[in-house]
Image (cartoon, rainbow over all chains, first blue to last red; front, side, top):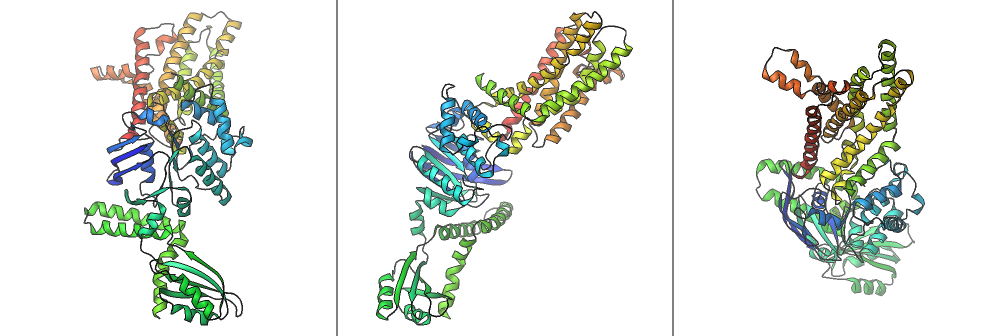
Amino acid sequence: MIEVEGISKRYGDLYAIRDLSFSVEKGDVVGFLGPNGAGKTTTMRILTCFFPPAEGKARVAGYDVFDDSLEVRRRIGYLPENPPLYSDMTVRGYLRFAAKIRDVPSRQVTKRVSEVMGRCGLEKMDERLIGHLSKGYRQRVGLAQALVHDPPVLILDEPTRGLDPAQIIEVRELMRSLSQEHTIILSTHILPEVSQVCKSVAILSNGRIVASGTPENLQAGVEAVCHLDLQISGSMSGAAELLSKVSGVLSVRTDPAPEGAVAALTLDYLPEEDPRQEVARALVNAGFGLLEMSTRGVSLEDVYLRLLKSSAGREWAGGEPPIEESLQSGSTGEEAVSGGEELPEADEAVSGPVAREAEVKA
Amino acid sequence: MKKVFYVWQREVISLFTSPVGYVAVAALTLINSFFFWLIAKSWPFASMQPLFGNMSITLLFFAPAFTMRQLAEEKRSGTMELLFTAPLTDVQVVLGKYLGAFTLFLFSVVASWIYPAFLAIYGSPDFGPIAAGYLGLLLIGGCYLVVGLFVSSLTKNQIVAFIGSLGILLVIFFLEAAIQLPDNWMMSVLAYLSLSSHFMPFTKGLIDLGDVVFYVSFIAFFLFATVRSVESRKWR
């Protein structure tokens, strides 16, 4: 459905994307993951024909984005990062306009607009001015605008940005239902979203794809520590000592809890040496009550941050021209800051294992 | 053509749901009415000729207000991405926008029909020169608007668009003054390029094909420049 071969786009001296290639099959839901400035929006703008790539070819539904740009645009619904809304129009008026400029036959405009308003939960808002809507509703109008001509391909730039948790779930549900009949590319830096919605993931960094595959494959591809959460009754210190002797367990952490209450422990282990059976047996044999045991696999956050780190490392080692290097490192600095804001828990995930290993040695 | 109509339609809805359109037309009518009153007091003939001269200058200050938001605001709010990822060509977008601004301008022109109406009530004006004057007004107004649209395509900021187009328009309008300098071919070229020098004949009831061609080519040139400026997102 979408084929991209070696596209590049520069702003001044800085490459927004460089030699990017990928393809998306019909019916796929692909997530673009990456820090701000990684090239997600630029790639999307090329696919939606906002501007052509400086080098390389991109085809959507068999049409080239440069040579047959109008044909491509007919087949694409695009929700930019900031929903492109006219605040002085009513929701219905705006959606009618969006439908008409997207070649919806005039007889079907009314029907399509009502349909899409129903789908996005906008029925009660139809005569409101867009300028008076809340952020969540604006996002929905933006989504409705992308769906109004029932395009085979949907390109959504951070579709859940600025929504509250309940709205995020709604939008994810909507995307899941849309994935039945549409090919979807979406970008995000909210990681759980990707594993929930997408069939495959491409991680972008500095204008390049540093990894791609299904979320499961990406997680499997990274060697990392798995975590096991336990709740037991009985003496915590005794249990910790016991468990640290079980083979395959790298470390044991106890969560402070009042004496006599339920104790919570977290074990770290390598995925290939699964100690779960041993842990259960050891605890039960020693007379502890095993109340709960659950695994936490390698999170996508681990994968993401590891890849970003290693790709940044490669850039430095690669011996690129110095001027470009300084520019890129400047932008990476920015990304790191914003990435930290978005993913506080992910930071812990990376620093975690190291700290835990230190604990074991002590 | 249908697409141009849709863009135009949206533009007009926008101009009339926001106060900008009403305020601009009302303020323009107010200042024109003041000049009409002054002229009617002091000028002994039932003629629109002096008022057309005034209107061509008051309009010069208001036309940038009609166009300042047209492309600048689209860029700032991101709606540009809707237009340029929809199956619309750049020409369709620019034409739709231009005709939208022109429609607002037409409203102000229609509002100014009260002046010839007054003349007809209290005197017996010759409607020939008045019709010619209005044709000239539409043409020169079309030139103001196209410069405004062009400058609006260069910036994200409405204020910059307003001041920028006002400055350019003032210069082009008063280029005629170059004719006062010692005679030399460059001076006459500059004077020829002036918007005002082609306007005076219309107010006297004189429709010169050369003047019409000048205005129409001026509009066509800047429309082309605007399309190019909008296209520049593709190779920048």
